[in-house]
View 1 (cartoon, one colour):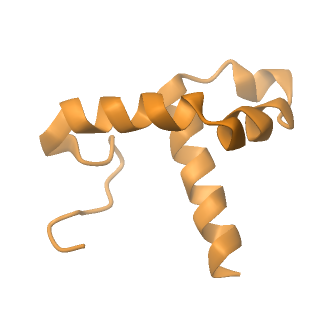
View 2 (cartoon, helix red, strand yellow; view 1 turned 30 degrees about the vertical axis):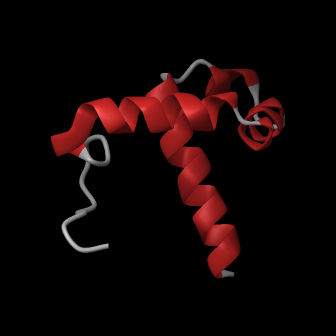
Length: 65
């Protein structure tokens, strides 16, 4: 995936429209909804951006394991 850098901000910063669309699709998925229900109430207060980033990070870590 050339050209994609990890940063402290939103992924795909140069392409906000695509990231927002992807973020919404992920948030609507059954896997994300199930994952979110397993988290405590404090976690659920995070912005959607942060929730999706953590979901993706945990999912990738699980796959890499």
